Image 1 (cartoon, rainbow, N blue to C red):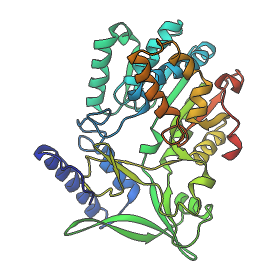
Image 2 (image 1 turned 90 degrees about the vertical axis):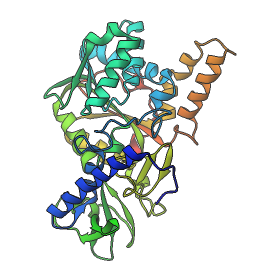
Image 3 (image 1 turned 135 degrees about the vertical axis):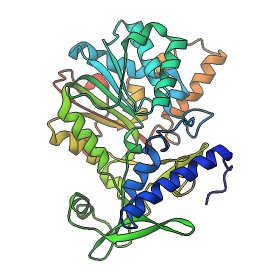
Image 4 (image 1 turned 90 degrees about the horizontal axis):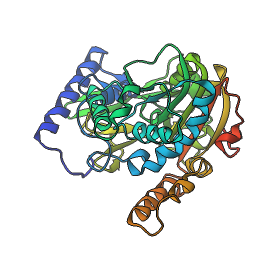
Length: 382
């Protein structure tokens, strides 16, 4: 168990309810569920899961800080890339998992300044509590833009314009697989008197076994296989009539993801700005994530007819898109300049988010050259 600050009485009562909910599911399933189902329940169980309940998650008072929370320059930079997509497609922006709403606000304010506002900014947000916070943010800082916002609880059947997912794919459930000498085993979750425990079962025929067989790993190797992420990309691609999918997240291409030195996987939990590796500790109060296999995401899009427009590090992407030019608009030497410069450093430094975070851009019917995104030619690594 991590040695971190214990939550208060209300939070402890909440995590006990989450644990009881998951234990009931395990019992109903015969005593065992795969880890993907455990992760799904811990994060998204209605009214209980980490992203479904009303605890603060983003920013200094939450468990982690995302790029939009660091600086408005992040959203302003993305707006420079959204503008040509909106101009060419005459479509909307659809943001997946908009969190605090900070990215939506910064992006729309910059598009307003550029004279490129979309007819609608659609926010796919299953959490009623987060929807309220997003609305309150706009009511306080840009009420004139509220008329362009549309909250969704499911993907639309048809999509035209820009689909934006910032740190979305990493929060989708993943399966845990251990490679044996001639067999593959799925690591799942069972229960004991002391709580949740790991328990393995041989993999049966199906998509997960097919995916495991395609990965060359030595016996004893343990890692994640994400089926939900590529499935989401495929669904978006199927519904995208014309436009661009833009994903920013931490992850690797397949060859780096399943590198021999990464033999314990990438599963990680976040609680009050501390990272740890115990997903059974305080379920419902911890974020649970895994790095993204960008090769699998790109393959899912291409199989549905999307064009791969680019793949790059976050640093290369943001710098090529004009992040430093926007920073340069601030008064040199001012307190605000140094504050934003420090945030930019976190976004692009190789030891911070610059190299670990990657950007995947795919599209359909988007005629502008990929150089409009100024992405380096890393696509071959996928």
